[in-house]
Length: 203
Image (cartoon, rainbow, N blue to C red):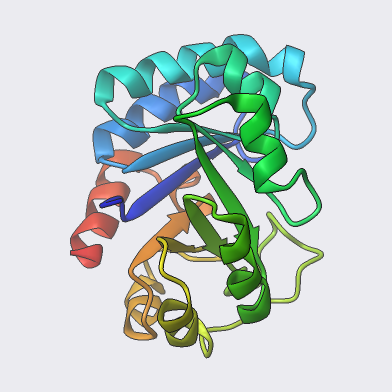
């Protein structure tokens, strides 16, 4: 997996009415993966938006990931689904979505990242590195274990949680190779330019 900048279209930050336009700007800016995340929305309510975003991603040749809802991911033709520590296992998720669909797994410590390898996800998220409004109940893991995770885990690792363009150089210096950026992108005045600047830093 060559993807380095993972963008999340989070309906906690943008409205459904804004979502398609913002997705277009994220794709135009060059995000490598685009996830739709909507913690407070029912899957049936989200399906039309998921279908529309998936079409944009398909045109841009960018993988489209659905957060939390394997059935909806299958229904909209998503390229993948992302699950958390308290969601279905990777194996259970694969059984629902079928072969050829990416499955990502959230991890919140070095131990969880190592344990996730036994489930054989296609990638893991590691974080939150910093305090973030997206995950207010999670204690930040900091930067200290980033290199250790990369030494212990052989699949792609996307560092996540409070990462923005301003602190991205520090995150990369700590050993990160791939990142997820949420509010930094969604709140940017010029989303396309913001993504391009982050990609330039990612190299």
